Image (cartoon, rainbow over all chains, first blue to last red; front, top):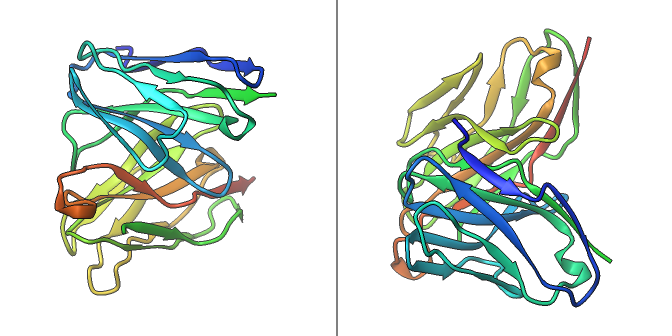
Length: 113
Length: 118
């Protein structure tokens, strides 16, 4: 039972490079989301999706793109990496948007130099 | 907008001590409340939840009661163990976000680091 799988676990980028963080879930959940975790700030929502083909911005979307072509996958793209995007990124999924448990991946630690 | 405030950490306790981590919230609607725990090197996992006023969530000896009158959801455990060392996050899910649209995002507190010594 894999749950939510994120790759890679660690990544170092140079300023200006682009990359995609992968997220896949095998629970047939409609709702998926991306958060970033920074010290002393909890987790902040970057983008979310309520189903295949439907995405929307969270509270800190600038510099990130998402797409949802299948129920299972929800990749996060960094268009032109900046040092301010150094963070730990978590993907989450849940059966519905509210009142239900969110399942989190193990996270991707990204450093932009 | 929605917000969650947790007590400042880190918290350091001896094994078998009593634990309280305070959490208060503000929300535009009638939220569900959660405690998530993050063990070292892992993602967050749900510890307990409550969906309406006066509900008590409980799991693994931890408890929290949804107090609408004080907008609080404090986490308690009567006797902590070394294995409870982790980061604890209080969170809310408000079905009606800003602008009245159904949003459903989780709003997190800043997290409280708990270290339990033998």
